[in-house]
Image (cartoon, rainbow, N blue to C red; front, top):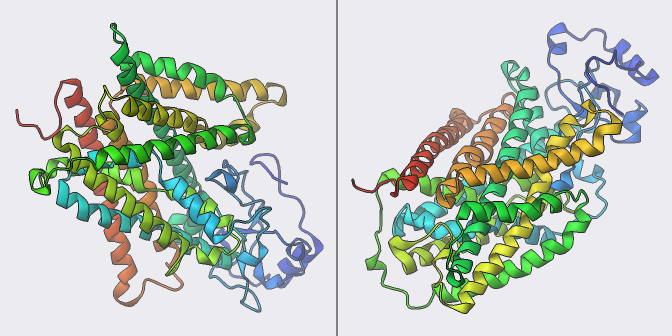
Length: 525
């Protein structure tokens, strides 16, 4: 059931709701000014006979939320909503447990969630870690990767913990990332209430930009690796831009598939090829390593923003954590100490640091944007690795593409007549593939592209937004703590994210300019 804005007044309240409204006629006008949301999942709530004191405001009904199901890694799980008294009262018993009210068809165990977390975090970003160390230095990169990884993990903790608080406070079984942001603003200071829809829009917008940006990076990655191999056997070299267009052609048709079930075999093939390719890459990487003294320990600070953007791009999995937590059989095991998140991210940070450290140690100043590009061109095994990983990333494109299309389509579907919806969705899919192809052709530089996406999108979603959410959720209850330590802590994270956003964006754009001119940021002229 849904009600669009402008389609008329909401339906009349049920008899139980009418009795509640009458009994609460003495509620002050000040309380009624703050719209907050609560879902009506249980039959008891729908019949109006579960803790009638839990709804103390007039009805507040939003338009449909332009998100995708929780199983698709981002978006809304909130249905029709009603207003409710602010303050976090859980009712007469005060023991509402959102985890007991979740209806997940196939809940995942802790081990399955751990594996999914690794799968979602160990992507093409691991191949870019040596380049990140090249923009930091061997020893500075070692320390900074652990610090940035710890900050990313902590911000995920913040997001999930705030989601749990809001679920209990509003009696909502589960929330997506955008849901948490919107509800936090509705629960926060009155000045933020009017921005609740905007923060939902912003989160979804950055998720779409991030995921489509990753698709552009995949096109550049595949084209660059294929170009290297093909050029060994051909006289007339084909430019990387032409290869991007060649690779994009079959993707136009593959991305017309609307059911994830038909993409599952491609995912399995991609996982196997990626695993085998990375293992063989490790063999090359650990062969004939030079002494650490031969590498720069700390590079010029001018290059640090490129390091920050690349590491954030590689490590940040903020877009998938809420879907993983929502699908768990025991969601309380996701955060805490020890927890699925800590163990999973600890392993991811360790692997990324290992690859970055030894990759840069092996190739030094010659380190490429992807370590596969450093493998010897004349070696048959190395050529097979380049092609295996390129094919794996090619198949991953369709899966990565699925989520932003779903988010965008949910936002425009209701505005298109039923007779034109099929053609309109196909047109959207084709247009987005062509858009990714156009951006990749215009900016075929893998290194600064990775850093730019990390700095723009993931510093926002991974650090700034979770910190703002916690400030809003803790605004009244339980407060900011002794000496307002939560306020100072989150302010520091927000400032760090903003600095990373602007410096990473600026230096990435400079790096694009320098690469087009034949140099790099930080080179002496």
